[in-house]
Structure formats: C-alpha cells, structure tokens
Image (tube, rainbow, N blue to C red; front, side, top):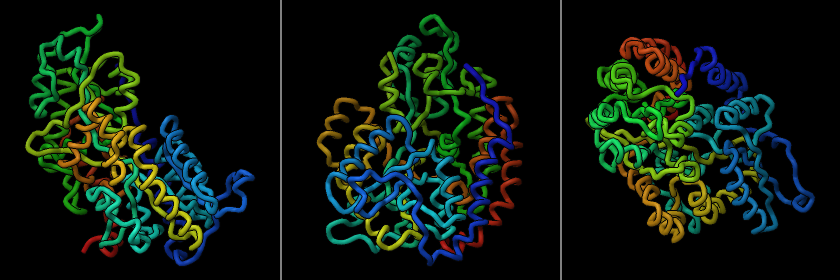
Length: 445
C-alpha cells in the first residue's frame, strides 16, 4: 500500500492552462469561419478521399479496438478516409484541442470526456448535430438517457460513445474467508461494518484492507455526495460545504484514519488484483481488464447507497468541431453513422464500456456475454439509478482540481472534511463567477 501526494500547483496546471488557451484563442469571435484541418498521415491508397481526423484519448488495448472499428469504416466505402490521432488520456487531448484554436487548425471529430465537452460548448466551438439526423439515422439510435446528457435546449452537441458508471468490485475469496456475504454492501454503513469484521484478516499471508481509495479521480466522491444527500452544487450554486456533502467526506476520513481499514492507493486496480485490498470502486470500463488480470474470482455490484443512490455517469462522447468545413463535417457525420450503427457493438463487447446504442443493446453477442459474465449485466442494470455529474463539476473547469486537493488532504493526512470543503468552495467562487454569465445565456433557462 502506498500513499499518493499531490501539490496544488501540479493539479491546477493542466486545468488552468487549457482554460487559458480557450480564453486567448478568440475562437468564439471566429466561430463562423472555416479552420484548416490538422496535419497527419494519409496512406497512398486513400489519397483521393475526403479526409476526416478523429482525435482519440484511448490508449493501449482500447486504442486498438477503436482502430479496428475505423479500419472497418475505411474498407466499407471509397469516398472518406478517417485518420485516428491518439493522445495519452483526456487531459492531454483537452490541452491540445484548446491550443488548436489558437492556430485555427482543428480536428473534425473528438472523443471529449463528460467533464470537458461542456467547456467547449460554452466556447461555442461544437457543431449542433440535431439537423444532421434523418429518417434512416435518428436520435432513436442512442440510449435516451445518454443522448439527453449531450443535449442542451433541444439541440444535440455530444453523442454517447464510451460511457460508464462506477461499480463496486469485491474479492470473493477474501469475503468468504472473512465470513462476509457474497454480495456488495447495501449501504456505506454496512461497508464500514464489514471493514471492522475484516480487521486482522490475512489473505495469502498478508494483511488486507477493506477498500483502496484513489486520489486521481473525484468521480467516485461525486457519487458518494449524492448517497449522503449532498452534492457539489445545486445548479451553479455550490453545496460543497453543506452538512450532507461534508458527511460523505467524513465517512471516508473515519474509514481510513479511525478504523484504519481503508487507505489512499497509488494504483487501485493493481492493489485489487494483488489482493492488498478487498474492494475498490472503479469504472464499468475497467471490468474487462480486471477479468484478465485477476487470479481470483471477484464480484461486481451496485455502488452502496446511504440515504439515496449515488451513481454518476462518466466516460466520453463524440463531438464535431464547428469550425471544420462543411464538406468535412458532412464526411464526419458519415463516420459517426458507421461508429454508432456498425461499430458500437464491437466497441462495447471488447472494451467493457456500456452499450449506448440500439444496435449494441440488441446485440446477441453482448447478451450472450452478459449471461455468461453477469457483472456486465449488473453494470447495465445500475444505469437505471445513474445521473450525470453536478453542473459545477461539468462547467467550472477548476472544480475537479480543487476537489482532488481536498480529497488528498483528507485521505492522506486526515484533515477536517468541513474545513477543506469550505476552503475549496471559497477558492472556486471566482471561477464560478467567470463562467456564470455565459452559462446563463447558453444553458440555463
């Protein structure tokens, strides 16, 4: 078990740099003009086709799956060539995309995360997509819950692709050895009680903790705040220092520092498959990789509740850049149609991301997989209690960095949850005030 240390400077650098890049580009003032396409490599056999550039944040195995899908598109017709350009994760892609507006050279299609795309919407750089639908390819091609998350004032700007929710993963061997039920805890209170029961238990000769926490993503804490009837914000009004939100973080503090049955991990997946921790909360998108890595049987369950369900949606979707030329945008729409109708089942089946389209939900292969490995079906069933993150987390870019600072202070050092959340709310106020006028004009009714 290893701790993770963050500095405020390190956490804020990427977020504020990207925000500053957008502010300096003047992209809103030029939104009516066409931008050049970013450079790249076009194989000779595709040289005469209309080129579409897709910027992707997927790496390693998921990158190969996406390339396989796009290879299928390129082979399916003779008019368009789609080139994927890869970035090592969403932050790297976000920074590069923000900078691209300064040079007026943009990609055509981008996999934007659920907490980045809203900022590009506010900058008025995303193409409205509702008018592209027709009788053969309409909104009913998508899961309605996910499609709604990319819709603002009846206009679609962000299409579902790699969507997920967190799941509760538990080591069945550890649970059985400690006399715990073969299921996930129904509440956070029950999780803590099970942790006390696990105290002193050794797995494969080594002591084990009940839960490993990550300090790299606040997504799980967003869900916990809802479970305790709190949240980040009510609309754009912050609720970080409300008693319910504080109670969610106080639970974590007590579990880690009073009970000493949880801890801040540097790699929750690695610790889980090594048997260091009995449970973790991680994305449905991690299920496939965990199945390949774990040398023991594990279970997956809904996230614990407390006073309410607390399940946030996450992942990424597809956005078209408004400043691409008309011809590029129309070609991009053809890529999207292939991805959604033909590629989505292959993507969900091989990556573990949730089925977000009609074609993938009805796929016989996905249904067979879910019957064979029920954890995949559990992930789909949990979607019925999920909701998108709070407004402030989606539209105020500094929110995540500030929450990560607060979590690190509590998880690593046992700081007072009320104090660190009050400080976070105070530091976020200038950013909220900066975003609020445009949010009211473009989003709020």
